[in-house]
Amino acid sequence: VRTIVGVDLGATNVRAAVVDEAGTAAAPIRRAVPRGEPPAAVADAVAALAREAASGREIAAVGVGLAGWLDPTRQVVRVGPNLGFRDVPFGPLLADRLPGSTVVLVNDLRSIAWGEYLYGSGQGACVLLVVFFGSGVGSSVVANGRPLEGSTNIACEIGHVRVVPRGGRACGCGQLGCLEAYVGGHNLERRARHDIEVGAKTVLTDLVGGRLDAITCATIEAAVALDDRYASSLWSEAAAHGGQVLGSLVTYLNPDRLIVGGGVWAGCAALRERALKRLRRSATPSALEACRIVEPALSDLAGILGAAAFAREALGST
Ligand SMILES: [Zn+2]
Image (cartoon, rainbow, N blue to C red; front, side):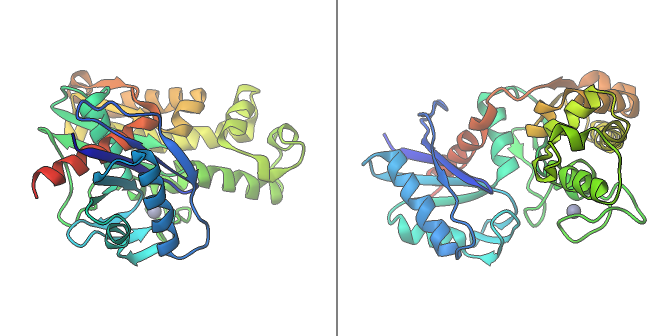
């Protein structure tokens, strides 16, 4: 039996687990991602964690899911926003630290979608669309049993679809008016803090006892439940953009299954309901009728399972 390790390399934590062929994973172990250190230090941490997860067994392959634009041929992270990577040969750095192991880097949302497709609520779908609203906004498509990669491996970057053509809000990617600038949790929280600093009157200030740093999307959701006008307008705008794009994607792709998830989506019922309403209004009825909208089934294990499955596949083809 070959030991395959799936790794989820996020902004703050890296998690790893051994995954078997049936998609059964041991409980993931985790450690903090080294902050402000060079890529080699991050590779050290990931390799050490993978070895720890394998607990002495020889690792045949490691699949690592991480946010960003990856070059699959050279295993280079072209742009890794969470880690501050630009053109970092992270695959080779990891492979140097795990001699004899095959290393595969995969976009995080593609790993999640692949995990849900193989083992979760995407099973059996013909066209599966996965969209996650968390601190950022990401998506992936599995069509006819394969993930959609795009010509240069950056397909489905839904967070950076422009939803406000002129005078839009600034996005972390450097563009203006991206979906993520309006629905990404990180941007929503930053925006609320800034608006309060320049005079917005909202119950949010009281909810965090004046400590604006403590405002999260959960706080905004709580303020909406208290009928706060400011928070409610923020949610209406976010839901309008999010729901509109979801509806357009349903019309465009004609998926039979749509998985919507992510921390902001799961934690903010009022936002979710408004976005779903907008989705149903904006998608073309024939496409909407064909599409079952479901929740993710594997919670935060999906990325690890998907990354491990990609690693197993790479091993099979070598
Ligand atoms: Zn953007």
